Length: 130
Image (cartoon, rainbow, N blue to C red):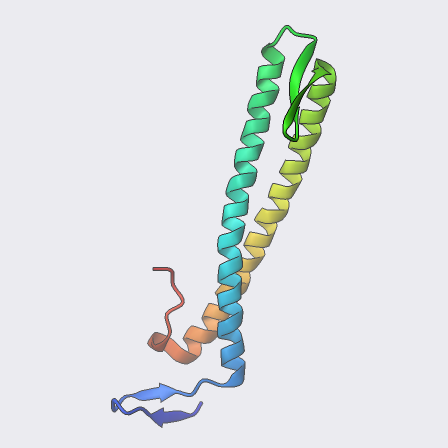
């Protein structure tokens, strides 16, 4: 580890190309983590809405219900709507699971990079959220 004197009289650790790559990678992972948190929130809300829709469908006495397809509502048999809602819930749950797995992977990668970067730069670098 090479030390060089800064103008302030303190010592600074030289930032190598590899260090810069690790810092950049940490930044990209941090950005993706924030995107994932937003996507997870949306997926959970979607899942909750589908659950509510399924519950409302159970309570209705109608054989044909209005079902939104894109921008329009169509009259669709209740059992077909139940099937569609179940398929949509399954797809949303699978997507949510994938997002959660990616989030865990990113957190693990960031923890590893923190160890490396804090190990070298100590208090000279801040990788924590404000």
